Length: 425
Ligand code: IMO
Ligand code: MG
Image 1 (spheres, rainbow, N blue to C red):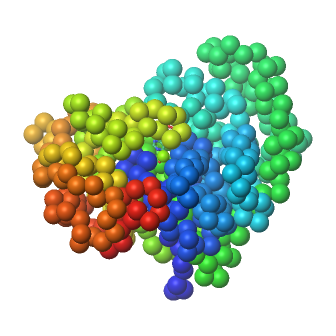
Image 2 (image 1 turned 180 degrees about the vertical axis):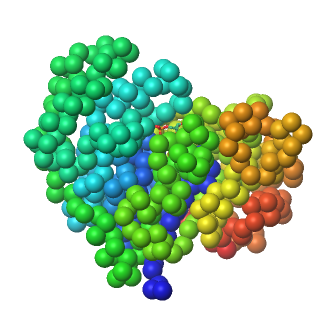
Image 3 (image 1 turned 45 degrees about the vertical axis):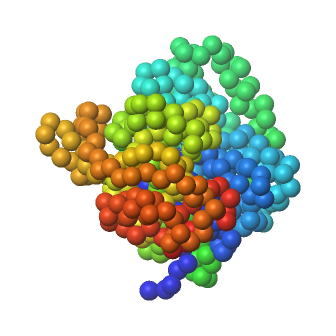
């Protein structure tokens, strides 16, 4: 078999594991960085040259002048993408059809998807980002979606738009006070600007990627969200509407799955989640706020405070298994400073039975109690340490427990948002 230079970067928890920083770190040696699922629900914070950038759709490799791909599995809000490109340009980054490639098969998010996102939250509260992600993917699978290639053909777009408004307006009007005419006007107001602007970026990204991989180029697949938000494998229905897991790469970019060489899992040294849904290791005491402050755990997309909890080896073990993770990166270990003792969940307990695998039952997900082991905390500032051996004894003990219960060696530690705040082991 050929030696492909591809790496998948996968979130092993409920998103916000620090994927953006790791992708940015690795992108120095990459040729292409690819988003294959999700949309602008993602929020990837990257610090570059002492400045903070929050990216939603465009891979963070753009800051390194690498070729970035938004593949077919992504849902693209033309307005959000337009604004993100303008934002990057205003900061001096070159975004041109030479370094950004958008799939002609990606589906388009339109304002009615955002309204439907609000409507659905009324009947089933998930705590979505309200970016229209779920309704756009629902349209894709109901075969009523509008792809970028449809969007760029004005007659095709107008015809599909009318059908979609006919179908969706009756539902929207029960919850949102907007007239049918205003809704249409809102959609077509900037249509010409966006379609003209996007056109030069649009290509068959599958061909592009297959050619690049076969030529031995280094290609990084950057997931958005995390394994526990995967629509098939996560805490359904409190998930996003795509497959952030490694299986999503092949479908979401069109490359054969045998082209994926290495899978790197990203785990935060504790657990967070945003929005509703079960969270067995959520901390219920004042300590939650301490951890939130120390880790600056506020959503990069919505600004919502993230729910914080202990490291959960049940979910990380599960993510390692279903993604075939080869190497684990642990992030934000430094944020646990001063918290004592530290706890790691090793199993869930429900009605006297222990669960070592993430259960499918919503009831068990919500009602089970975590079984913890405790270990001593640390008081030192470890953010500037560059060598694993120099980490305080208690930190190493905590790391070794995570390794033991996750069954994997941790190869890299991210101890801050700057690229050099990293330990390679
Ligand atoms: P990154 O890429 C954390 C969560 C939302 C909500 C659920 C469904 O930064 O890790 P959606 O808008 O996708 O339909 O919302 O998924 N969610 C995320 N949580 N990080 C993310 O992305 C997320 N993207 C969506 O909070 O609970
Ligand atoms: Mg994020």
